[in-house]
Amino acid sequence: MATLLNTTTSKGAGNYIGETKKQLRDGFGVYNYPNKFFRYEGEWSKGKKHGHGKLVMADGSFYEGQFIVGEIQGHGFRRWAFTGNEYTGQFVKGELNGYGVMVYGDGSRYEGEWVENRREGEGKLTNKDGSIYEGFFHNHRRHGEGNWILSNGDVYEGDWVNDLRQGHGVMKFVDGTIYGGQWWGDVFNGEGSMFHNSGVSYEGMWVNGRPEVETVQIRIIGDDHVEFMQGRPFGFEVECVTADGEPTNEDGRLLQVTAGIKITSGRKSAGGTESDFDTLMTPFGFEIDPYPLTEMLGEMTSNESILPGATSQAPSVMSNRPAQASPPTAEELSKPLESIQVTDMSDVGYKESSFVETRGELPTRTGAPSQASTMMPTNTTTQADVSSDPSVLMVPPAAVLPPPVSPVRTTAGKALLENLYIPLLPSGVKPVNSFVSLQTSPPSEMQEDPKLANTKSKDKRSPLLNANLLKVVNRSVPSPDGRKKKDALADVVEKVEGKRKKEKKEEKDDKFCKPGDYVIIVEDVTSPPFLGVTLTPAFLHVKVTQKKRAQSKKESRRN
Image (tube, rainbow, N blue to C red; front, side):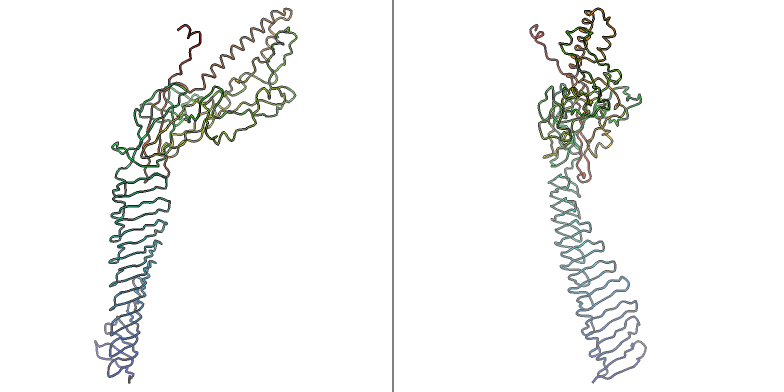
């Protein structure tokens, strides 16, 4: 039968208060160790801690759980005061062994197997940053096969060696990029494939996280100087190469092609100052200004354009007067001049240069209509219909630039650019300053030059004979002699018709770009850049020559 013993032993023997049996601690009791660091309270058997008990340390740490023959053994709870770590699980001879859960003071948590106080075997580790590893451990480190979910959402599934990704593994990035292949030292190493979220894909050898054959620039295949006549479409091929000029096999690089025109010496802007365009120095030794470039998707005709202007109508503020007079008919010209009714248009303010010149004609696109073309009015009214209505004011079509060339993607490191066309730059319109961000975004907008917005030029759609011109004839020709009036009027009509024919010929010639030096630029606009690298652009020097004039029948017979 156990008896209560309350005794204080000699120095070095410690102090025990509790139950005893045959002079041995047996039952429940409290023992203060002689070093004053440990204190045990719990069950005893034959003088040893046995059963459930709590071992408290002077620094605040403690263990509470099972004891077997004086040893911490079985299931228990341990807390370390200095680190704040808390463990609940299996113990063997005072060590963490078996299955247990450790909650670390920094917020991390491990649940799994332990061997001699180290993570060993299968377990799940949740780090303080929110990342989660679930797999195998060895010697307290991730080792073997395991899955790692990073705090940003990236996921790795594969092999580990000494806490590093090594062997075969698949990395799925949150942005959609996927790498599958060999790892070494926690980076891509060996044979592997990457499908980048930008659309680029690479398959081959990797060294220290980079492709063994890494693309750094774009190169023109063949001669980088070409020459052709006005109005001709053209094309060329480019390839992606390394720093040593070796071709690569990447797929999916997004390439944008733009153009520029050579800057002539002493070029000034409309205001007499240096041009405010952002210029670019080319490898050919001269600077260029931005210039539009488009695609020819169909045959070009003399009366069609890519984005035909629509005639707008607006009620005239002077609706009781016609906006412009109709040309005289042949019957009227045969009558005496004094019988011809001429409207005085001087108070209307009409002049020959009252409309902005819009002579730019571009090839027709036979493909799907562009967004710009679908926004144009469809109920276009002809000039003849509008001019017959005196309450309608004629408004000329706005000058519109053609759509830019659509970006293309590389296949096996190459891209074919075809059906390119250098159009005429309409008067009063200039491209946006596009060289500022040459390697970040392709130019996609065009704007009207405010300095040229109010510039007036001749309206190519004006009638054959201006009413003001007839008025001048009436005033300048003596009235008594009708024959002189007729002759003078005939001379004026002939002069006007000749001038109009000349303008029509010039208008036909002006549908092509001006002869000269142009530069085609091929840029890498892959977004986001593949592995953070934007390729160096390629340049093609294009020399446009004047279109040869077709021989007349008379010249053909002469030859």
